[in-house]
Length: 87
Image 1 (tube, rainbow, N blue to C red):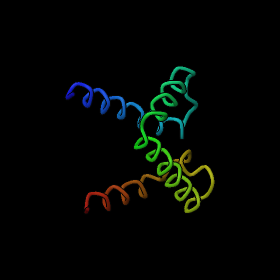
Image 2 (cartoon, helix red, strand yellow):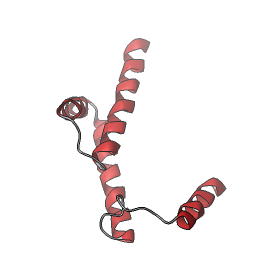
Image 3 (cartoon, rainbow, N blue to C red):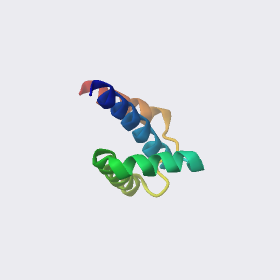
Image 4 (cartoon, helix red, strand yellow):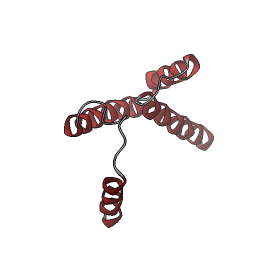
């Protein structure tokens, strides 16, 4: 049973990476099939995808369209990193 759980967690990790990747670049056919197959079995990863898309849309509305594709100025990046480190 532990092997099954370990394998599932590894698969979830790969799936979340694919979910994040698809927001930035197109996935290969193989990656798309892996993603769809896993999400069909895993409600947690499906929820993660929905949340990730929602967060991406919020960020886009705050910073304008294509915010995830634009580059932040170095000063702004450092300010964000500083704020994260304070948490």
